Image 1 (spheres, rainbow, N blue to C red):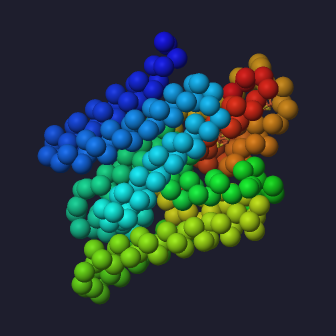
Image 2 (image 1 turned 90 degrees about the vertical axis):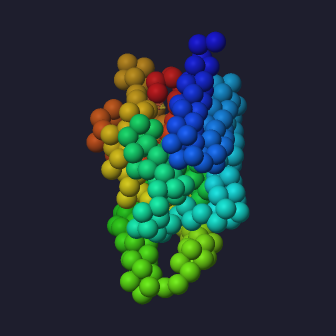
Image 3 (image 1 turned 180 degrees about the horizontal axis):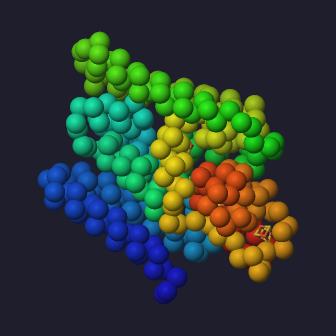
Length: 272
Ligand code: SF4
Ligand code: SF4
Ligand code: SF4
């Protein structure tokens, strides 16, 4: 039973968050929301322990579709980065701001870029594409993420400065248009660079939050140097080009790790 401790602990942690937010904010939504996400993640970890090949993909679909379809399209909550700026500036500490605080700003101090591996609805689609292992070496246009980050901020600031009416409606439209643009760009880049995760590596503005915070992540993949035979398999299968055999925090592309466990699953010596 010891092996099932992790999914149980995760479920309990999410339930504590769910109940605390439900009671403090007097809103039943938080109980439902965090219970659902906690159950999905715990179920995924359970499947992983059972060595089910598609455990991560199941979690990605359960959480990603819930956020995209239910929260985004049905509840019309803009969970994209411009939605975060909008709710932040209006002082509304609700779903989108809480989501960013937990998944993308403070959470990565504990679980790194787990969001990118298990919940992001953009990557949920990109991971279906054929280039799971990058076919070419990594390129350098990482600066583009700062441009998209600044553009999202400027877009919302401009709406406020122009005193545009019915901003809620505009934010919903921005959510739809933004997602279409993300998917189209992500798919085009994946085929152009032969790399499913090219969008994550070069364009995604959220990495401006995720990368520095995940540098300090408590949960990391580590290499047992005694067991490692330097076969290089882990680096070949890594979708994010992480130099996972280097245990230092400064390892190459260390802040890109999405905890997908492909390296762990493929290591012939169980060194990771
Ligand atoms: S880098 Fe951006 S697009 Fe990629 S998984 Fe993370 S949040 Fe999603
Ligand atoms: S796959 Fe395993 S044995 Fe091979 S280099 Fe990576 S950690 Fe070492
Ligand atoms: S393959 Fe390993 S190092 Fe690469 S992203 Fe996945 S968990 Fe991280």
